[in-house]
Image 1 (cartoon, rainbow, N blue to C red):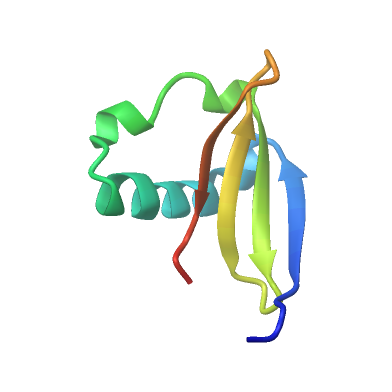
Image 2 (cartoon, rainbow, N blue to C red):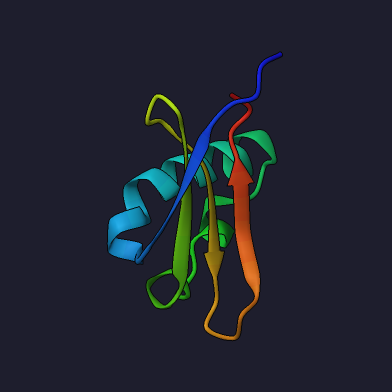
Length: 79
């Protein structure tokens, strides 16, 4: 299998929200059964967010960095 190329973009919550929500709901809520009300919390607007994009531009991964430097909500779609 050939190596795939990815780009990582660091952004704020307003920039990441749509794609990060889609990936996190897919991975955490649908695949892992995390209740929706548990997945969303008050921290997202205060965090740095990373989005991983495949070579074709699709967002396939996300993570957040809390103000205290903890990494959380890291999710990568099966694709």
